[in-house]
Image 1 (cartoon, helix red, strand yellow):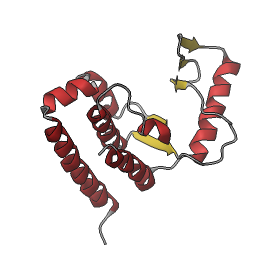
Image 2: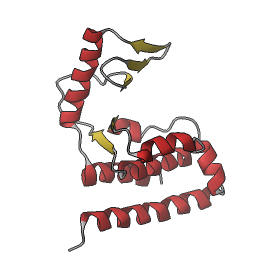
Image 3: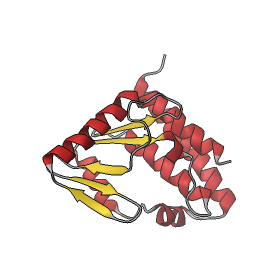
Image 4: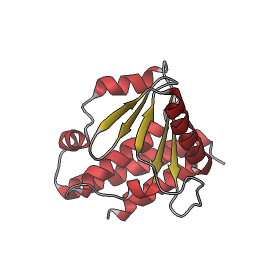
Length: 168
C-alpha cells in the first residue's frame, strides 16, 4: 500500500500531465499560462511557503466549475495551482460540496479573515474592511459553519480534479 504522501505526489504528477495536455492543445506556452493565471506574484508564494503563517481556505464547489471569461484553460491552471497549494504544510483547503445541507442558507459573499481584528469582504460594488468585533465574530461563525460541511484532503482533490476534467 502506498503512503498518503506518495498518493499526493502521484496525483500531482497526473494533474501536471493533464494540465500540460490542455495547455499544449490550446497552443499556449507555460509562461503565458502563468501570466493568465496570475502566477507572477512569487512574493505572495513565498508567504505561503515560509511557514510563518497558517492559511485556511474554503471554496464552494460551484466556484471550481465557473469559467469567468472566455478561456477555460485559465481556470484549469488556477485549479491545478489550488491542488499544489493545498499540499503545503501551512495551508488547509476545504471544498464545500454542492448539494450538502447547510445551516447558513445561501452561499455567503467572499471574505478573508486575517485575525480577530480585521475581515475583508468582497462585494459586487465595493471592498469592505470590517473591524467591529461583533461583525468579525459573525464572519468567524460563518467560516466555522462552512468548515464543518467542507471536505478536505483526498475528497477535496477529487472534487478539484473532477472540475478540471469537466473542462474537457
